[in-house]
Length: 123
Image 1 (tube, helix red, strand yellow):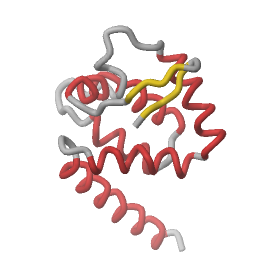
Image 2 (cartoon, rainbow, N blue to C red):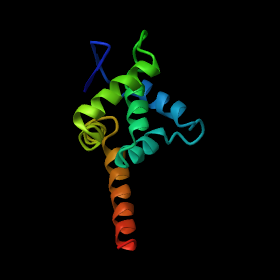
Image 3 (cartoon, rainbow, N blue to C red):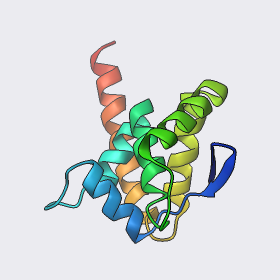
């Protein structure tokens, strides 16, 4: 998965540096649940969290764009493609990544069950 920031294409990688950055972004130093939090917010289509996940996907780089630059690029992407598609693309990447697929699929299934129960409750 790639993102264009200031006319330069960057590859997002979802490896160990990504997980460490998510734990930092979501202040998960002890329980290491940054990935779970990110998936939940992506399922809720949270624009701010798309930026967090994208920034974490660049954590492997020695020289990376600033968080504000990533946020601006994500804002443009969301305006052009919409939150449904962008969040869906990130969720697809996480659920098909060999390192995260099993965990991501379980988390997604759990959130889907919760969403369904909430919808039924509020009908």
